[in-house]
Length: 125
Image 1: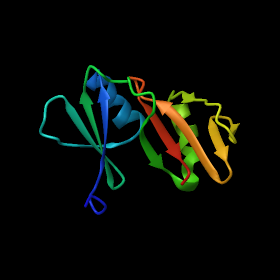
Image 2: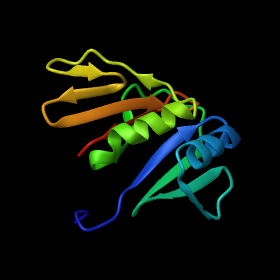
Image 3: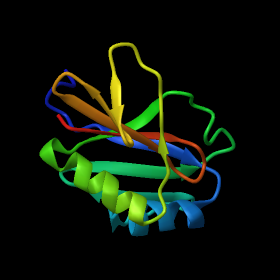
Image 4: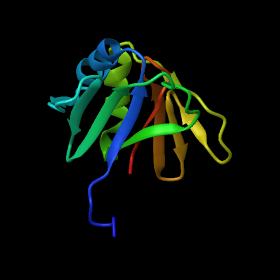
């Protein structure tokens, strides 16, 4: 039923202006028109990210969106860190950490938060 349909990451924020600066300028997402007030739309590769105002922004304690980066993970982490992004560090069973990147076998991951505390993941694949 939904297996051949596109899904959109939908992320709640309190301050659209701060979120817009972060998602567009810091992360480099491409803005797209939504036609709705209180909503910002972005393209990220062939995916979409929708950012909207909500009083519940940042209350999710789990990952809100994940980007699959392949071999470019470490370089992107370094580039974001150079832009002032801080990365989260977690103690996960069977995982070691090399700087800001968590490593489990061949899988690598890094987590960051947007200005509202939404958790975003970057993974190697």
